[in-house]
Amino acid sequence: MQRLAPGMPISGEALAEQLGVTRAAVWKQIAALRALGLPIEARTNVGYSLPWPVELLDATRIAQLSGAAGPPIQVHWALDSTQDELARTLHAQPDLAVVLAEQQTGGRGRRGHVWSSPPCMGVYLSCLKRFAGGPATLSGLSIAAGVCTAHALAELGVPDLRLKWPNDLLARGAKLAGILIEVQGEYDGPCTARVGVGVNLRLPEDLHQTVTQPVIDLATLCSGQPPGRNAIAAALIRHLRAGLLSFEHSGLAPFLDDFARLDALADQPLCLQGAGALREGTGRGINDRGALRVQHGGIITLIESSQVSVRIAPAP
Image 1: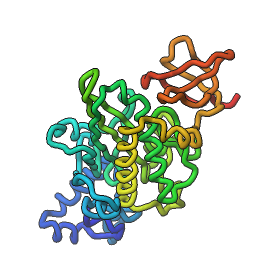
Image 2 (image 1 turned 180 degrees about the vertical axis):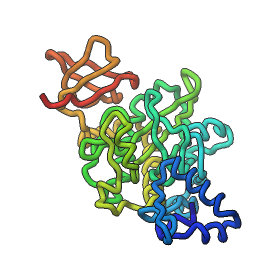
Image 3 (image 1 turned 135 degrees about the vertical axis):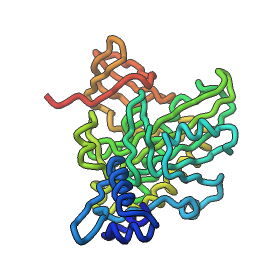
């Protein structure tokens, strides 16, 4: 992958010589990377190349760009998921530890949905935060993490960002990033939260045909020139770490105004699944614990369960 990262063509013969393997072994590796979702091109008498340069993640560079001291940042080539890696190594990890992966073989989102994580085509990370209280004290944590993610990308010049309750970052009405909160611990504390963030950098064309909702990537939003992956990771880590400490001390309150400003569901007609008899309504923001307020027939209902699916109703 390092040989292909610059985006310049390189022949199979040169790859074989540099790697000390056969041409057949090179072809097998190219086929394996293609199967993972990398759009590697091959041209006769020219060689293999990616359609654009790829910046590989560098833990040292990310730490420098984040601009503040903190626990070591861990970068892996491949994981089942960054969330699972934190869970496996939980007791060895310091508070605010961050794990990143170039690719995930089992990336997931809320309600068990698959999060496509092809190599080097997104930023996939998880941050660990320990809290003295129990899981009930973390109501609204996904809202806070969403605000932090939006701030990080806006700082890098990404336009048109909106937040969709409870855990999606949208741009131009399509999903750009998702957040997954997983909590373990005692009922009345202490507990540990793993905050996972996945951001689309470049989406393969065929992915648009397989997902059930509109999706978008940073390359599209930034006219083909998205921010560097290390800069994205550094901004996310800086804002997440600061935001998690703020949430620990002050709860959701510091994030409410920013969420209201970015709320994609406010005053929109909504379709709901999993909310019992309530199937439709109008979004009316969130309450001070992060529950979605839905108005129907003059009555406001609070939606708190993360298992409820909420979509903006299609235009008639």
